[in-house]
Length: 198
Image 1 (tube, rainbow, N blue to C red):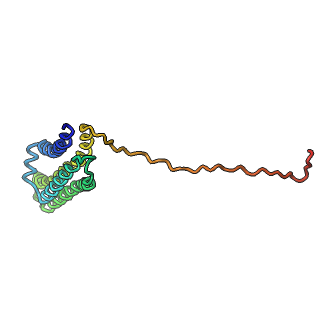
Image 2 (spheres, helix red, strand yellow; image 1 turned 60 degrees about the vertical axis):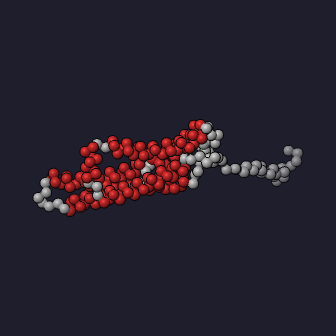
Image 3 (cartoon, helix red, strand yellow; image 1 turned 135 degrees about the vertical axis):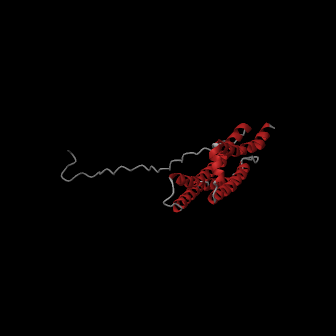
């Protein structure tokens, strides 16, 4: 019964960790910074956040499936998709940087000779929101793959599974053919000019 409980309930509990981690990161941002961000969201931010959330939900569903015990082992079919989606998370900081560069260009193109330094800073500050969106989405989209790796070992350990954890084995050395080298034949003929008695 305990093993069943671990192998059924524990995957759901493990899948709550990335959601709680994302909420903790979002709530750890200082309130004025969070308010400024929410008041200055751009279209690039909306794109990054919407694609990132869809990617996160897809990964969480695949992680839940990958953590379910199937009698003799885990379902490894979602692993390839999880790996691909985790690699896609690397694009979010680049999208954020692209949004930041575009916003900076827009800020500088709207400047005139009468602009004060304070106005420059006020116009430039919203350009940073895209970078924040990209970094946040990249961070939370890394969690699901990590949860699957750690969660499987935890479920095996707590469930008392006899299935050994696969450890990479070093490659076996290539067989070498060691054929004995024949000694050169001994010459039985006498050199010219010697006689048999000497």
